[in-house]
Structures are given as C-alpha cells and as structure tokens.
Length: 234
Image 1 (cartoon, helix red, strand yellow):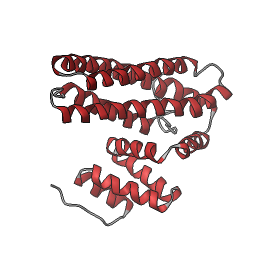
Image 2 (tube, helix red, strand yellow):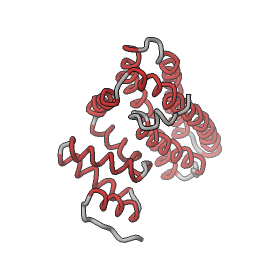
Image 3 (cartoon, rainbow, N blue to C red):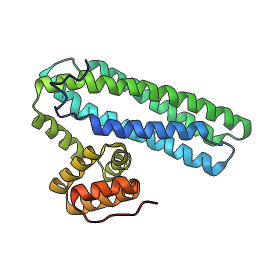
C-alpha cells in the first residue's frame, strides 16, 4: 500500500529512524567496499563501523518487537507476524556479519582480502533486504497503525520507545538521524526536544548537530529555532 493524500499527513513513526538506518547502512557499505584490508588501521576502523551497525540494527528490531508489534497486535491481530518472522532472520544475519567481521580481523594478507570481499557481499545483501523490509513497515505497518490508532497514540508509543533507549543508543540514533533529516524534520525534532527533554539533553544534542551539519544547514536550523549561533561556511 502506498502513502495516499489522505494518509500523507498522519504521524509516521518510522520516518526519522529509518532515515538514520538507511544513512548508516549506506555509509557503512561504502566504507567496507573501499576498505584497504591490508591497512591495519583502516581495517580496524571499518570493522568497528560494521559492528556499530550490527549493534544499531539489533537494538532497532528489538525496540520494534517490544513497542510497535504489540501495539499492532492489540487491535489488529496477526498483522505484525510476517515482519516479526523477518526480524528473526535479520538477527541471524546480524550474527553472521559479526562472525565475518571477526574472521577478517583474525586473518592476514590475501586471506584477509578475500574475507573482506566476502564481508562486503554479505553486507550488501543485508542492506538490500533491510531496505525492502523498511519499505514494508513504512507502508503496510503504517497502514495498520493509522487505521487503529490516533496520531497522539502513535506518538505516545514512540515516546515510550525513546524513553527506553540507553544514552549510547540515543546518541547513536541522533548521530545518524540529524544529518539524514530534511530541514523541516530537523526543526520539528529539536523543537520537540526543547519542549520535552531535559535541558542538558537538548543542549548536548544541539552541540552534536552543530558538528554534524554543514554551515548552511546549521544556520537554517539556528534561524528556525532562533538560537543566534551562526557558523561561517568553510
């Protein structure tokens, strides 16, 4: 089911976090594809990024299992079962990625190069499958949520999920989400944080954004939030 004009304005619980995941997946896949596996420092940095992605994906599907699927099942039984089954498959795929990353780390020379190429192909398949998986959630799952719950209820589910995040999970989410959002999405994110989050959390996340965004994007956010903290373009 595609987004229609009637549903386009509904609260999309998947939109922002899926942009973050797509950005992280794309950058990690590119990093693995270009990595010089004979360079130990570059190899270590790239494998660390793969492990971060694996951790992020595992945490994300766990949160969906805990918060979104029960909300769907409570009012539309069986509607989350297909994706829940895919989550089991994704958990197995995440374990395989971690195992392959460990193999690359342990090997040397041409053996490491071959293992790195295998990791790239494995990660490419994982990313492709997850892109399709997220599209299914954004269309079919959103349709169920919109048919059975109000926007306020959906936002409440998201708020409960966000409150459950560890500081590390929250920081990682923001690191990839902030640059991936449109200007208007970014303004809404920070306006909501300023209203509901503790001041140190808002200020810390804003400082992170300043380091992640281009000068142009930061100055647009600064103007929209009336922060009066402009930066010069490089």
